[in-house]
Image (cartoon, rainbow, N blue to C red; front, side, top):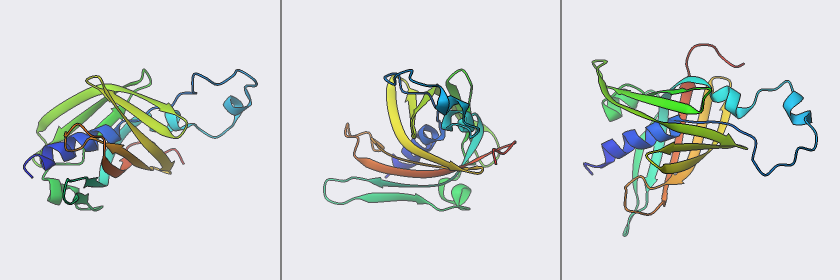
Length: 169
């Protein structure tokens, strides 16, 4: 159980990242989708996001365990501030983990991309995929990953983050 908090932080960081790009295999038929007035997931992900809530179901040999951080309880449950993740236009991201006293505990970096409705986040050579939806200034991420570092991507992650600054309404 002592590994759950660091793993929760790592997973929260991973889902914080997001990107959006047309799939490479698509044919250049028409540019109609690019001329739509609605923004794309990649455009919407740009900027700073902060974690609001998450729930991770960790697949166990005998039984599953759950890390549940309800909305409004992030600091109480995890004893850190909501993770701050910035998605940059160049496809890079940075996540800052801060203690309750605002000191930086850890900083992680990586790259991100979006394919369709899926955010791909790569850090230290490992890529995690999250089905992502954004409504207003809130985003939800859902995927399967190796939260408990047992070598099996069999743990279910769901998370919610809020965009900071300008809103994409």
